[in-house]
Amino acid sequence: MDKEKKLIPNLPKGFKDRYGSELETKKKIVSKIENIFKNYGYQPLETPALEISKNIGSFLADDPNNPMSDVFTFNDKKESLTLRYDLSAPLSRFIAQNYMNIVFPFKRYAYGDVFRQEKADVARFRSFSQFDADIIGDVNEAQADAEICNLIADSFLECGLKKDQFVINISNKKILQGLLKEIKIPEEKQYQVLKTIDKLDRLGFEGVEKLLKDGRTDGSGAFITGCKLSDNQVSQIKATINSNNLNELKSNLKNELSIEGIKELEELYEILSFGNNLASVQTNINITRGLSYYSSFIVETNLNFKIKNAKGKEVSSGSCGSGGRYNSLISRFKGADYKGTGMSIGIDRLLYALNQIEEIKVKPQSPVLVCILDKKYIQNCYEIINQLREKGINSEIYLDQNKNLKKQLQYGDRKNTDLAIIIGENEIKENKILLKKLKSKKENDQIFVTKENLVNEIKKLI
Image 1 (spheres, rainbow, N blue to C red):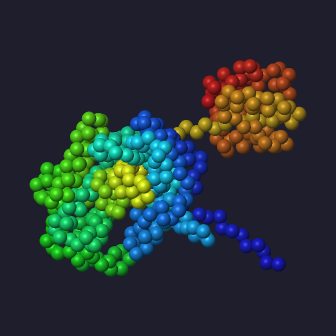
Image 2 (cartoon, rainbow, N blue to C red):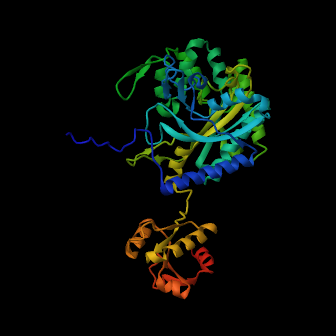
């Protein structure tokens, strides 16, 4: 008979297990951000990981000929289901489904895993956690968009970043849209042009310029066909994306749509000036994210320091908090037409960066270990552990009464446990309990306490 073929215990690329201190740190980050959202008056919403595929939409894919290429989709005999690629598409479905019972403006936050069918690297996962905040309803757009910027800034500061360690880049989609119309770029080519501009941070203008014209050869040797723009068109695009001064842009751009976008940014900045985060926000016209998703305001938050990948090479952390205004996302659904604005914080990417600069620390609370010195006293041990847990002290009892004390203490050492409780015949007779400090190297690393005073003594030591 053939030997059973053993499975290889590994994960697919772009996925990651987390446990121990790393997971505790992640939970602490989530808790800090949640407190900020609550402080701003947002309420929680939870939606399933799977949605009906047609409700998810096709806002993510780079390939317009294969709009669902960047998501995980599953088909059965009855329907097609897709794993959510963000938390905004499920929100739009929820609003359209429940608008009769919702008080508007609806301010919600949501936390959960999202899934992307894309190339994975050190700072890019195919499954990762996002924390979103959105405002849905008929509101003053400048106020709502400014609040999104303030939420990002306050969340990053609460997580331990300093003001000079991140920058919130904002733009307005209308500015570049108006420019492309002004320089007579056909509408069917505008998407490709904007996607090319979005590569500026990665390729530099020399690489972008080649793609705006005839094309360029990438690192693999493949030739990427360009947008076939004229020298004059490329020159005007370059002049615009190199200028992030709104007054200068207003002087250079004369079309109505660009001026409208500039005015909306000016109103947003005015609202930001009433708070504490204006210095953290700057204009960056070349942000073109979410082209078929966002309608005007766009935000992208970047860290001002490099991180190292698994090979020790310095790499960019990418955007850790991004979003924008979407005034047509919910109107895709029958009977629903609501404007929205929001942002998403990439928790795993932020965690990766924070771990490298050690700006957020978690003190692990290892449980007190109750050792069983003699199995005939096991009932006494359980009385002690019940007492500790009732008082909120993390504690565990060793789960093999047949192991000797040395084995039990070795277990505590390996788990980095601070305290062990030892109960034997002498302790029972004298109504005392032995507390042993496992991490101590001093001679007085153990003390006797009464059962009545046990909880108070443990609280002093942990």
